[in-house]
Image (cartoon, rainbow, N blue to C red; front, side, top):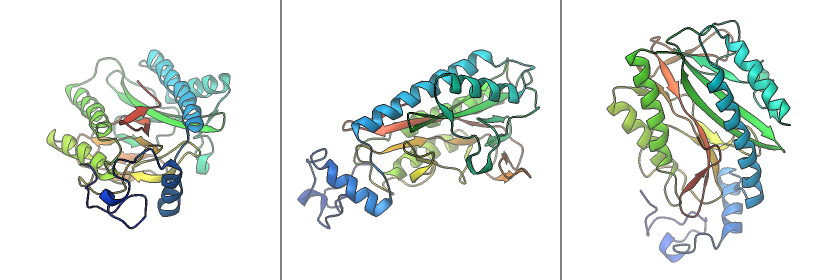
Length: 288
């Protein structure tokens, strides 16, 4: 749902869109930048910044590719952490999760009923598990963030379903990313798809701005109403990362104060990419 001609102009002028910036998007980038920071604390990225995030994103994708080739039954989640940590350092980057607000490892590894923020440790992957690996790298001062859910060997029909629904949820959310659309359009598309498949969307965890820091404004919920929320403009960089449960959406946090699991112990899956809003639509800076 695009910005209406009679809606308030997102530049903050107080005029209607048709009397102000309609047809002029891209001609007022400096004003958009000032307004979006003043109103929302959103830091729009310049071409140089986007290129830096793209380089970091390329490393994130290569890291996920390495993990995908390496995952197998009998592997510990801590082995995945070591793999990611060493590969990241080898390529001149820093793993953003390590010591972030006290997080003790370099990557989040979330198995089966774990929704997100799983701490790598002694848990051994079994045939039939699904495992989400969430990688954020800092390269040249820029952050990029992406994750995938992998199948360990042959998995059950339920596991196949939730992985498929989560991947499609990401794609449907990304399909709403273009100038003039709103953040609510992204969540609406994800929620409509997931619930049509009998699954649920986690509410407590959301996508977020990224690039200069690990987490920046805006928040990007994976549920919501079409036509609501902040208007998307070129230069916005954020993640879309729907967490989809096979059962109910409720979660609980384990005693480590990090690991989020489904309250009903149903399977959960997630996929994530970092994207930038362009003049025509969007570009993934972590394309896979």
